[in-house]
Image (tube, rainbow, N blue to C red; front, side, top):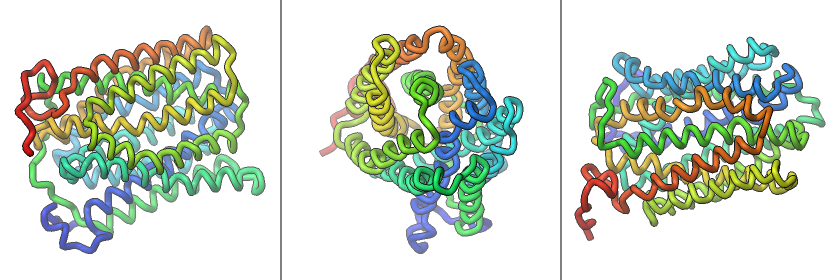
Length: 410
């Protein structure tokens, strides 16, 4: 990684050494560790550590602290390239995931979760920035869809092995975590040595910036973080606590999500390209309102496990449309703002994530249905905010309140 190659000259490299190929390889590596960790987590903490709703809330609060501190990326990229930081973070995620089962207590799980979370959140912050710097605006929606599908495809293999082999081979949490984390770490090390450092044409501002004209993007990021936390923390926990799902059953549900993402993520990217960010996000948030209301109905009206599983899959499909928020920012941002704003936005996205899981863990003990009704209200707020996005966002026309946009070129 000592050689530096300008982005414009990267097209002369072999296909397997180009920036887009690196993005695909990283996109495949990250979810092998993170998604495997997520698939086993609820069973692991309930069976091994005896977690209840309060404990799982605290676990996810600790997990989100590094996300809240993602703004620290701005300080690190002063002396370390984003590409290097992304791969070092990916390596940390892999190693921490590999040793998760070595710490089967509340304190141990919280500690190792913090380390893996630092790797995950710093990787994600840098990765989003590299996407928007390395992909041109015209290709970005479609390519982001394909990158999402690549991550789903890579994880499909891991989940398929868990479902098929967990019971026949008597797999343990330790074996699965070691293998998944080890694969991610190995890919990160390979990428460090196999690829040059790619130089984007627009130098990034290496200080924290908050621009008034990005206010709608900031608000949508805040609401997305708050709403998403409720699903990530409590939807999977519900499947184990209420319906008694075992490891291979939870993983089978994840498998369905992966296949759906492989099929629909590229279509979602095409939809953003075709219909624009405004229409796509309105559709996503309207769908999420319905999904979370139905989740609440599971507790208030006693609806069954099949509906719960279907809602889990639908929510994941809708989540693929979140790439529209990235391309919305790409269209309104100054090119040099992408890296620092990615860090700021990631921090804003995690403000609610730091305190919501712990607080709602206590509410969960009293009324699980109320937790999902709160999520429906958040999705409704996001829906109202999405109506402020112009059909053709650009610098100077970030919202429908900022004046008329010039007619798009023919």
